[in-house]
Image (cartoon, rainbow, N blue to C red; front, top):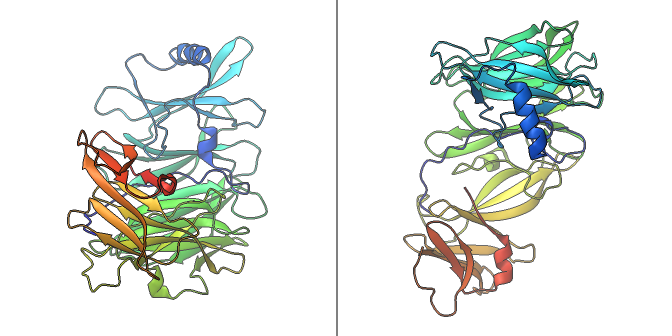
Length: 409
């Protein structure tokens, strides 16, 4: 399959996990329109009318009003980030708390860069009040990012950590249920380190550190449960022009461990193209991807179709296959293989519009997909899978298998 360079931005924290609470789950806008209007009226008392409200780049829902129960009293506070139109002004934030007579500003944060990347709320100093973790950069085109951790137990917020980073996640990584930060710094061709931090008396201490391959760049990062018992993060990276590999980093007894599944060889984790780690089956455990050739013909990598296989770790840190996908980059879709399919081989037309999935055992057609231009007449005997603004996706096979088809935006 022909594929261009495909760079995919950072992902948000994994949701749906009973052991690892996602910060995105506490960053949702107010639900009722009436409440939203009252909230906006209250915010306008503290945020200048000419200010531009901003949302974290890495927050998928792009919320401009964040909610979090910062003081664990059962009521959520509101957090709004904004920037004044002055080209030299930096982002500020207003934290509002609901009282009997309405919303009141309790904290103001200032000087947090020009570009807001990420916001998390975690009690990292174990005082019962969540800290505000803000990832930002100082200019629109800056490649360096900074993390500031604000301690907000009083009306005067205190910076208890300020450092450069490439990616970070916070949460309870150990069974002790104490909030910690796992943070990486990557300077390509120079340094690649991962550190685990804890806080004592509002001072950040490095619990452990790992050094990783420095000749890579990130395409995706994700944190959460790596197995039923182990939590940590996965760093999906680009190697060279199009190849990729994933670093699986677990946290065990306040130590960082680089995991290579016992039943896999190191070279198996090295992939021909970019693939993101994700929770493909929705069980709260992140899967990492391997790639295998989808044809037994002697094809070059540029035209070889590939099968993305998603694995997760069991408690013995062995890789178990969860799902298999074919992804068509040219027409932005993927097909999940049904569990009862035999081993599969794939054929593609030269323009990649027509793809056939066949059984290796007997060459029977398991499924096919054809991509028509929008408005093109539907040929007789074809079933519509999906219509987009550009294309109509059709098949001659059973529409039931089409339930495994999805568009990739």
